[in-house]
Amino acid sequence: MVTLERKVLEKNDRIALEIRRELRERRVLALNFVSSPGAGKTTLLERIIQDLSPELTIQVIEGDQATDRDAQRIRSAGARAVQVNTGAGCHLDASMVARAIEELDPPGGALLAIENVGNLVCPALFDLGEVCKVLVLSVTEGDDKPAKYPHIVRASQLLVLNKIDLLPYVLFDTDRCIELAGKVNPRIQSLRVSATRGDGLADLYRWLRAQAAHPECERSS
Ligand SMILES: Nc1nc2c(ncn2[C@@H]2O[C@H](COP(=O)(O)OP(=O)(O)OP(=O)(O)O)[C@@H](O)[C@H]2O)c(=O)[nH]1
Ligand SMILES: [Mg+2]
Image (tube, rainbow, N blue to C red):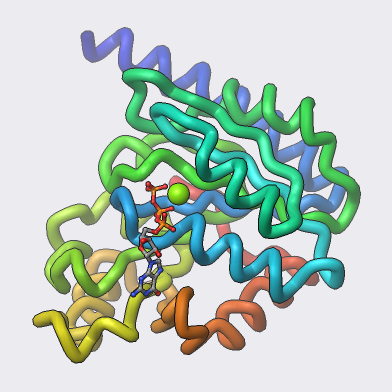
């Protein structure tokens, strides 16, 4: 079992390296959005598309176990999207992303957003050839999550703390959550946002523009 798992990961990493090399050559910025189910990845992407197109060409690879609902939402927001259904699988892998990239054929300078399957565990292990992982946590999930799911925090370069409009109604200490994330990964950056109300989105867009100009994230581990 352990050998099989290692071989699967090695094969995945080889394909991911190839994706990263090709996208760098084409000047395409790939970001891998990871979160638990419902933290707000698609809502954030809808806002990003509405607010940053056409300044930035945005394409999306949507990962879900079933349905093409998220891809439809992205198309309604105004961007091209390919839906990947993983069936029983709990994460996207690099070969799925490679096929989706072939279909999308992103132009130079584009932002390629990959929305992973909602899951804080397995996506941490699978490199998709992205420049960096963006971890979305929301304030309804409990402020202890960075300590309980450290691998995904370690593999991510940006923490987007979403749904801060709900803070008056939930027990959630944003400082504690960000402090716990920093203990696990001292290099992680963090932003507090509300995808629905708009708080903090200007900071997120500043970060995205900076990445598009000079991708600074290191290779995800
Ligand atoms: N109050 C509030 N609700 C939000 C916010 N962002 C997203 N939501 C709601 O949270 C729910 C889930 O949002 P989605 O964007 O579908 O979440 P997701 O992470 O894409 O979900 P999966 O793809 O299923 O993992 C929806 O009802 C959204 O309207 C926010 O900032 N504030
Ligand atoms: Mg979604």
